[in-house]
Image 1 (cartoon, rainbow, N blue to C red):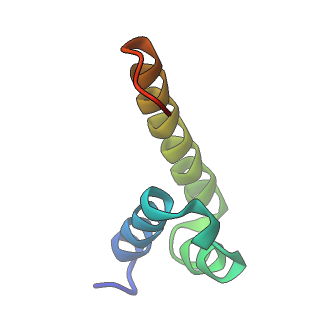
Image 2: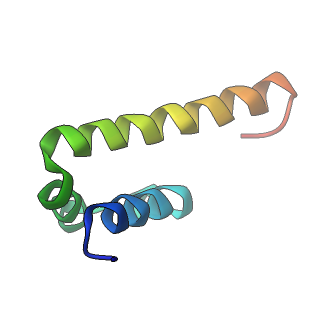
Length: 65
């Protein structure tokens, strides 16, 4: 269900991977309404950690970031 909690989480993750600037206030509010404030914060933190891990991995092998 794209309007359910899982759909909202997946949508934000896809936007984060494609273009983080596409995550606007309406997208954040959509997720917050489905998973709550703590769910929104936890999801964004998880995305940031995931992104950081890939950047560190890329740096360790000398790949451009």
